[in-house]
Image 1 (cartoon, rainbow, N blue to C red):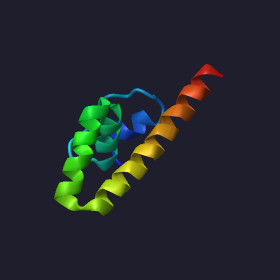
Image 2: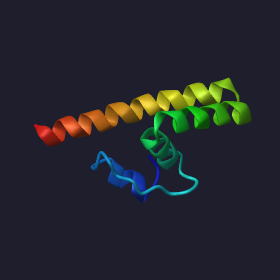
Image 3: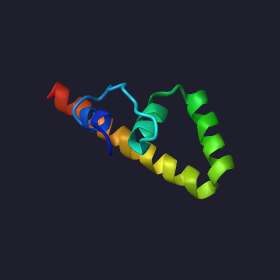
Image 4: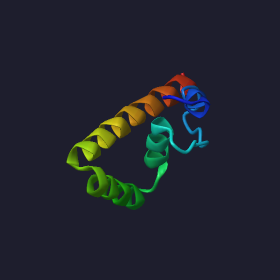
Length: 77
């Protein structure tokens, strides 16, 4: 996570402020998309940058899901 918006997202599970050009913001935005839109965006990533980029994006989405799950668990504890 590389910007002030990403730093705020470290504390807030549903932080929805995204900065253009920030990879962390892009992954958070992708994570919060509805499933069909997310699948279409992953297809575009693959078309533009190859299979490896898609795999990396999916890996980052899994990390984001774990981060949000941990924050929500912490908030309810």
